[in-house]
Length: 203
Ligand SMILES: Cc1cc2nc3c(=O)[nH]c(=O)nc-3n(C[C@H](O)[C@H](O)[C@H](O)COP(=O)(O)OP(=O)(O)OC[C@H]3O[C@@H](n4cnc5c(N)ncnc54)[C@H](O)[C@@H]3O)c2cc1C
Image (cartoon, rainbow, N blue to C red):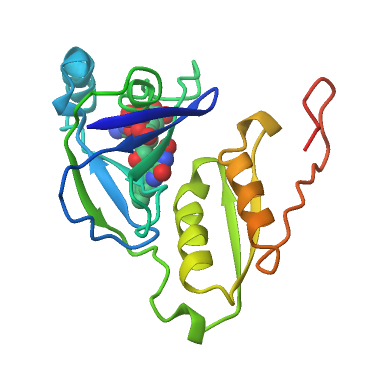
């Protein structure tokens, strides 16, 4: 059940999920999947796109934004756009998850899996991790950073994170808070390469 929908940026929402007493056995970096067929509101679009593409629409993968030691389970979804002439089909699931899911709604998730995880013995391998991310690609790394700060405090983190605009930076306040709470583990220095006129160059 959706316990909270947190609007991170204009096109990105974090869904905090309440899963009852289920044991949440996942690693930082793992993803879950959400099958679009479960949403009645998408039924026509799903069938139409399946006819056009000639194949069944697969479940979509979403990395966990939460870390295993945290009380809640969360995924963070960025809305895909349809650009006339550039994208082949309109995106199916992400617009619904970002804009139309509200607290109390129920959805079926499947998980957890994926090879992109923080190894359990990471402390014996390195004392500095450089995370290189763009857009919603920061989601699994956000989970890894939170988990590593709690369980491997000797490791420093450098996050190189690219976005089109400052307003697109997901977890900006959370990252600044983590950096302030863990001054030994990393520097938080938002920088802007070439801010275009009219864009928010703050930070
Ligand atoms: C391991 C993994 C983790 C992920 N984690 C996240 C995450 O944390 N957050 C997040 O926001 N996203 C994540 N994603 C992306 C996510 O799974 C979806 O791909 C994304 O939300 C778009 O889904 P959609 O249904 O909205 O769009 P889709 O309907 O899948 O369409 C997306 C684009 O693909 C094109 N397209 C679709 N089908 C075809 C086709 N048959 N031929 C040609 N072009 C096609 C469409 O035109 C459109 O431009 C992850 C993906 C993977 C694989």
